[in-house]
Amino acid sequence: MSRTYQIAIIVGSLRKESWNRKLIEAMTALAPDTLAFRFIEIGDLPFYNQDLETDTPPAEWTRFREEMTDIDGVLFATPEYNRTVPAVLKNALDVGSRPYGQSVWGGKPAGIVTASMGATGGFGANHHLRQSLVFLDMPTLQQPEAYIGKVQDIVTDDGVVESSRDFLAGFMSAFTKWVDTHKG
Image 1 (cartoon, helix red, strand yellow):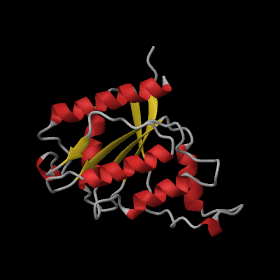
Image 2: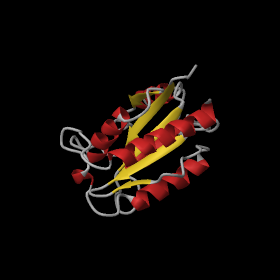
Image 3: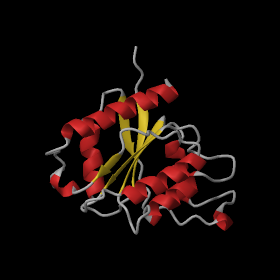
Image 4: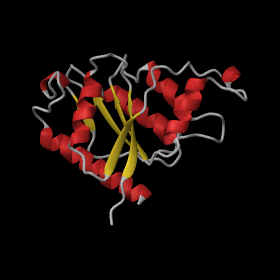
């Protein structure tokens, strides 16, 4: 009997018409049914400041940490800002890794999809994010790598995958096996 895994999707773009959100929404439709997806919002998280880590941390931090507790794996979808991850995504990593010894990330298998309207597909952001995930003890899918350049030619405004369907479905299949290897 196969198990259904709870997968958090964290999108590093706050833009209303985010290409990364559209792409990852389309990719969830290509995934095996053993994955159940939950978008975890990060745009309302106050910047991490250890002074706020008291008996009553910001409610948004508490909400985020609680939403992450029953998650089996994490799928990140992010653009690249100045050759790295957007600040909102780095902040979510920091909030989730605290307080010391209570990280929500440890041991959760991860996958990374970076997409841009340009040709490089977020290569720099993808690799910077991988560096943080190593420290956070998140085994991260190595292959296939998903740098999606010219995303506007791959997914339509209404979230339909027009090209690269086989590659994106293959990535989701590999991610499913990755989660099963680490959580099955």
